[in-house]
Image (tube, rainbow, N blue to C red; front, side):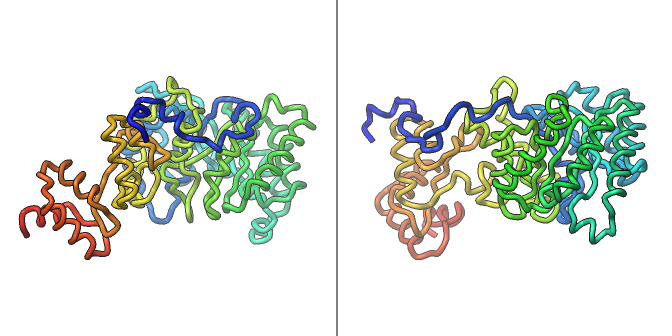
Length: 419
């Protein structure tokens, strides 16, 4: 790269195949999110349930990120869950956090009535998301008939609406459910006053084709009922096939009103859609309004979820992982170093990464390992305040070439000190 290019807009130096043959805007409306970290995320068998103060901190981070709705929990799980939901709801009110409160409930009065009670005590409406298993495999295992599901659905939604709370209806395992069952349950819920349907990939079964087919079918039901302008659609995905993030992006592109996710993608089995990666990708696509979404705390959010739930962040996890902006490979390090020498931090961020580290409070790290070259060692020594003599560079590089991993800071300092 020529030096006189160093001040050019870096985007002009990237040929973006992602934008070729795109017709019209990627999204028809601004994306909206439901954060399930402290409800569905806590159904993972490996997590620790955070303290109430930790959950409050997560609420503040969600509000700063511009997430619109948060699931506060499942009060039907017991007194502790009810107490937590009430305290979190009061936190939203007292701190004026711009988050719509949401709670999950089975389609039974025992789950819904505690939500009604909490809402009335605090004086704030709670969106009730009531769910029922709808797939034939689940019905066979449970011994459920469609008439039974329809009865539970009607009574549950009616109870919510009659208590002046917004009702969202969730068909669990929607992506493996028969259209006749979905048609019956959707119509029943809507007739009783549900204002939202949540299409749920409970077992992580869906592919993009499946999502598109399911969405088309659901819209046909709404059109036939004449409620397509009144009833909104949410997408709730799980990651069993590793497609949750891809499907979430498609869901927004194809017109879902909201998409659900959890910090770090935590949740039952292999987890939910990763909320932090969903936000990251929408930012990179230029689809998040910076006035609404402050992503300067996105890494803080991921690290807080990790700390509070005892879920480690994998070293290679995008953006927040230890290795996300770390390299010991000679050719990669050389390109980053040359970019930094041009005084262009944006260039240095993007020459070997699709994610701009500095935007999110991170930076490129050059390490020394068996794939490194002299430029790695020179950079490391100078960055750590050491004189990079030829003799010292040779010793460090020789030690690295003999090894089978990246040298630690302590190992390099021992070489510098003559050890």
